[in-house]
Length: 80
Image (cartoon, rainbow, N blue to C red; front, side, top):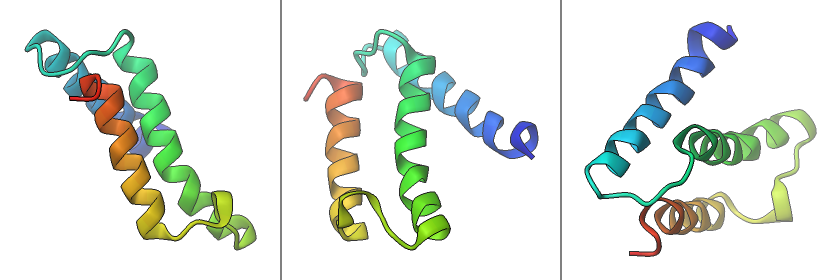
């Protein structure tokens, strides 16, 4: 399952980030690690909810996604 679903998503995201860096649209030191951190943080919310019925910080899904988007923009574009 990991190879068929998840690893492809991580590699596709890392490739998208590498392309953004090459085009000067993103400022990321390590596209592979950045993809891993962004995707892991995004999926963790749902996984934790499914496993124990709680979410990180007890924040709403909307608040979590808004913060995730803000963080992703700052990470990928240096706050632009």
